[in-house]
Image 1 (cartoon, rainbow over the protein chains, first blue to last red):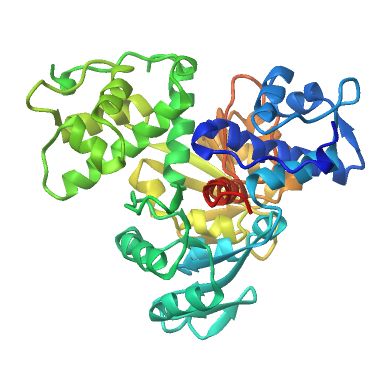
Image 2 (cartoon, rainbow over the protein chains, first blue to last red; image 1 turned 180 degrees about the horizontal axis):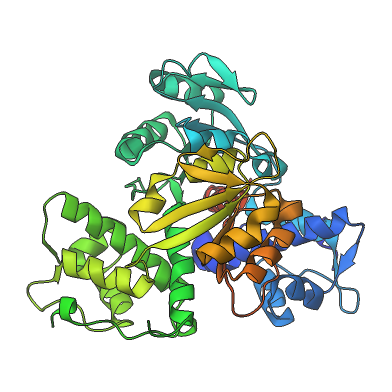
Length: 222
Length: 222
């Protein structure tokens, strides 16, 4: 079956395990890498091998979203990239408003991976008068009290919070009030959001803790 | 049962679902927050409510690691913090070597959450001659060819890769050769590592994609 001619049906995100969706991103990265290297088709076993998964895992993950690939041929890399981007919703550009232009915020402004995957930070906000009314990495920095207006005027759907933890909930509330429907939160605090707003939290210390658990318990009793 | 007097048994990390371990970090954050607010005990339902989980979920997660809390009293916050840090292995300090002092690397050097949870970046490496032989945020920056020596001399167990994707595998290989047993990888590339080395990958664009999937599919057909 030709994935290129087939738009995947909308999926109830609640019905797809989070782990499957996060593996879609991994498949996408590898497929994009293969394409850059000039490879046009890939089998489920090769794709699995690149990521340390079984071929059955790859096929099962993709089966959540439709019938991809052809027996004996495998997947066409470009078609599968297009299909996965369609599933993830990154087949169009998403604009992003970011709050907090500290070290982390600056890193995020300069992070090329966002643009490569279709995310464009179009406005950033910071309370420091020394940072506002200029651009960093080409992105204009506004004072915090412009947040609602800028998000509304540009109909920005995604908010990115890189502010201190103490300010994060208030920032989130303002974003939601202005119409943001998804928030990526880097502040180490749990946000309370209305049900129609999606939330992904990235706590960098948590990532290190997860690693630590694996290292500490792998080493046996201490 | 008094968790304070009971050292959790070492757990086979492979037997505990990743999602459970990642929720331990969330419980830890909330408990630390409650303690800062002066609260000494918490019930499973309160802890669950703060995070949007059921009380049954909280109890089931903690049951992987032993018997915590007391019927009718709940958990003592300080004891549960101590127990979770023991489980995660963050009850002692872990030193970290970081490679790549670009925007993201600088953000990580200044990220206070690491120190708060027991991680200390003690050495950083960058190929830019303008960055080496000085300190940033109090941390010494070395040229890349010092990597093996510094890691070995200081017996640094954890490596943090914030280098460009193209350099990441080589950096990882050098870290492993020098004795690192866990790697936190921020470079958007899949690393191949020997079985005794733990790996956690953080791809910031992936986090945005996960958010996007949820937003795009929640909005229904486009």
